[in-house]
Image (tube, rainbow, N blue to C red):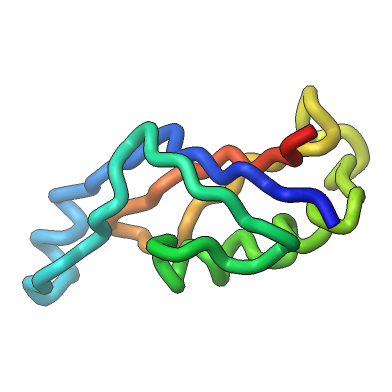
Length: 100
């Protein structure tokens, strides 16, 4: 199994959508742009949001097994993927890539 690096490349907050639809919450996404996590053996790294992990788990597991080339050439690096968490108010984009 290969290790997979998970890098937070962009974090966005849609304040207009939150104001219109969201109940106020404490402890919304606390990850920061530039944060790096490492999935060892395809396992969820400590500190990574459960919701984000749910969005990327299958991709991380496939990369850890040595797979890749998702969607027939989607990424320039076939051993990577760009995945966003499923929070519509605070989407976070993660670059996941095999550590060689």
